[in-house]
Picture (cartoon, rainbow, N blue to C red):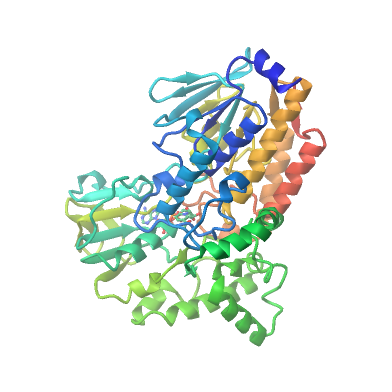
Length: 543
Ligand code: N01
């Protein structure tokens, strides 16, 4: 069936996309190119997804610009980045550029939060409802809701009594908050907390950092990049880089110098020099060694090197044990490593205090600040809740999604464990896909690499269906079970279960703890998804 005939037969919308970040934007463009009608419902007021919401001071991407962008030539050929790791404002400007080039906004309903979706068996369409009472009836529903769209708030007593300014980092006011000369508090030291600390330490009257677990942050190695440098790369290497990023475990193009090398098998001299060299330009690649994420001994070698480099940067030896402890509280890299700029030096400043919540837990939030168990009230003007997200599943389960049964997808995942097939679909929820969510190679790697592959896979699938007159696709429970078993088996070969990370849901009180993503790497993930497609969508029922 041609795309024209298909459109005539299906007068209503082919696809409703939820979310207009990297995945929603790319998905819409690729669907349009393939001749599908598609719209986006987006809760925010602008394109950008996570970059729209995470407007806290210091927000910056930790993937290099070369891979952290869309591979669409029309977009990249006349866009120039200013820094190796662009900040939030530059990323928002990039999304405006994307919009100018691709005219995406005409198909986006902004300020439109999707609250529910029910699959209508008789019409084989989704009935999608929004907070403001709108509905849509697409044939396919694609959730481009990312892994971090449901913020996790701490449940300290008195949270709402605080008289100063208090916000979660992912709900920071778009207009910003005056911070210079203020007494600032930050709860949480994940990637968001690290960025807030290093940004606000130089301007705060006083900064109090409430830390539960130290972050094993590694240097970002930021630098300005020139137009000429980018022009040369565009002429010769961009398409190669975009293809290459799909062939690697993390979706990056430049971990090759360490990939497949064993840290453990090096001589001490070779190891030291290799790590020193890496620290000079790409420290995060330390997780790319063949054995660091899977062998406890190699992992400890990486940790020991990291700990010693950090300790050298801390003036007060009392901070050593708090920020870079002798014994790692969890294996290195099993919680996502933040990339930092002068983070550790912030703690050498006289106006910065570190409160170790293991020694003095928070008792309550008071109108004036934060009270800890030692009866100290830390008085504050501004309090950042950098406490993370109900990651991966939360982005989807916060929507009341019901498929062929009456079970909301969140209830299914809570009671039966994560059920996805290929991290793209879930049995019992026909004609629904999700991108950069649970069960895929989401997380430790580079977002746009995985996102583009998944969006292309979905478009190919819908095109295949259209050509054969199929109107319904659904994963089989068996296929879902075997993908779940594979996720578990691959994760068990690593050290993932030994950290209370969002990768396994352990950061959310009461959440089922189990691997929530495929840790076998992007290249392997792509191979499996392609095999299903090439075999005529093995593991799915099409009708
Ligand atoms: O969240 P997190 P995040 N009381 O979950 C602490 C991406 N990202 O927003 O470790 C006190 O990592 C919690 O402590 P603990 C990136 O993928 C990317 O920082 O659970 N503390 C932890 O320190 C990242 O991994 C970028 O003991 C509490 C922190 O809050 C992901 O988003 C920038 C607490 C949460 O850390 C999430 O990062 C930002 C409580 N009740 C984010 N509850 C870049 O691209 C939680 N914590 C650079």
